[in-house]
Image 1 (tube, rainbow, N blue to C red):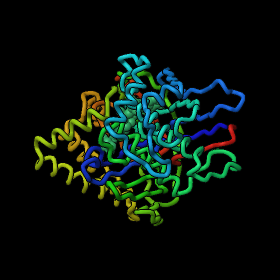
Image 2 (image 1 turned 180 degrees about the vertical axis):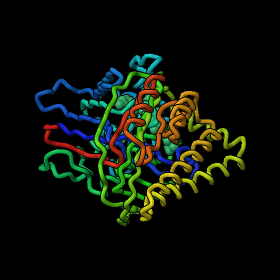
Image 3 (image 1 turned 30 degrees about the vertical axis):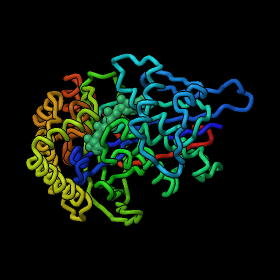
Image 4 (image 1 turned 90 degrees about the vertical axis):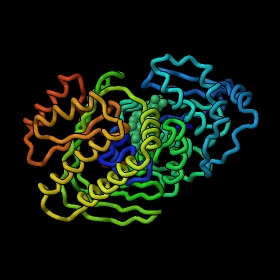
Length: 428
Ligand SMILES: Nc1ncnc2c1ncn2[C@@H]1O[C@H](COP(=O)(O)OP(=O)(O)O)[C@@H](O)[C@H]1O
Ligand SMILES: C[C@@](O)(CCOP(=O)(O)O)CC(=O)O
Ligand SMILES: [Mg+2]
C-alpha cells in the first residue's frame, strides 16, 4: 500500500516571534510543498522488517531494524493515533540514540531534530510497523518559509491517512483534503513534531500548513481568511545554505475570506488587491536558537519586551482588518500595510532577529521606495517586499536583478493556496 501527502510552506505577513508570546500574527500558505510517500512492505517482501526514511533534499537515508527500535524503546510508546501527545525529554533522549547511530555530517546536524520528530510521529501514530518513507521538498530548508512545519504536517497526513483512526475515501482520484476533524488531528500531531524541532513553537506554521489559505492566529485562537486579493511575494535567500532553484508559480485569485474560530467558519468578502513580492536571502539559520534568543531577551527585559509584543499584537490585528476591509481605496490600504510592515520590521530588530543580509534587502528595496520586512524566524532566511499595485513590471524586474546581484534569490510564489492534501492513486 502506498499513500502520498503534501503540505505547503508559509510566509508570515506580521507577528512572527511575538506570536510565540501570545500576540496575534497573520500568515499565508505558499504554493511550495513538502511531499511524503509512505509505503508498507507487501506480503511478498517478508524480509523487509525495517523502518526506512529517505530525506531527498539533504541526501540522507536512515534505516532501523524494527527489533532495534523495540530494544531502544522497550516500553514502547504508548500513544494512540487519535490523541496527540508531547514527546517527553526522556523519550527524546532515547530517540536521539537511534538517530545518532547514523552519521549526520556536522554541516547538516540540524536535520537530527527533524529525524527525531519523524520517529516520534511515526511510532506514535503507526507503532512498530516496517515501512519506507520518502520526503522531498520544494521549500528551502531553514529559511523562514516553514519547512519544518510542512515536514511535520505532510508526515502526519501520510501516517494518519494510513492509520485506522482516520476514515479516508480511498476511491477519490488526485489530491484530496482531509475532513475538518482529520485536519485538526494532523495539525495537533504536527504541532508535537514542531515542538521537537523548534523547542517552543506558537503553532502558526503547522496551522497554516494544514489549513492553507490566509490566517490570523493567536495561540488557542485561529482566524482563517480566504481572500480574493492578489498577493505576490518575492522571496530573497542569502545563499549561505544550499542552492535553491528558483521556483515560480502562478498567482491565484481568492474569492472570499473565511474566519475560523474554535471550529466555526465565517465567510468574509474582500475586494482588496494586495501584491506582495517574496524575496529569499539564503543565509542559513536555526529557528529554535532564534526563538530561544527572543525568550532570553524577554527574560532580561520583561517590561520592554512585553511592550514590543503588545505593539506587534496591534500591528497584526490592524494588518488583518486592513486586508479584510471593504474600502475600495487600495492605495490607502497599501500605504497602511507598508507602514505596518516597516513598524513590524523595526520591532523585529528590537527582538534581535534581524541580520546584515536582511538589512541589505531592506536597503536595496528602499532605493526603489519599496518596503520590506523579514518573515519567519529571521537571522537570515527570507524577506518580504510589498509591491504596490501601480508599480511597473520594469521596476520589479530591476529590483529582482539587483537583489540577485547581491547573491540573493527571488521567487514569486502562489499565496493562500491549499493546505494538507493526500493522494492514494499513485498517479501524481
Ligand atoms: N524536507 C526536509 N527534509 C529533512 N528535514 C527537514 C525537511 N524540512 C524541514 N526539515 C527539518 O526542519 C529544520 C528546519 O526548520 P526551521 O529551522 O524551523 O526552519 P524553517 O521551518 O523556516 O524552514 C531542518 O533542519 C530539519 O530538521
Ligand atoms: C519565529 C516563529 O514565529 C516562526 C518561525 O518560522 P520558521 O521556522 O522560521 O519558518 C516561531 C513560531 O511561531 O513558532
Ligand atoms: Mg520552522
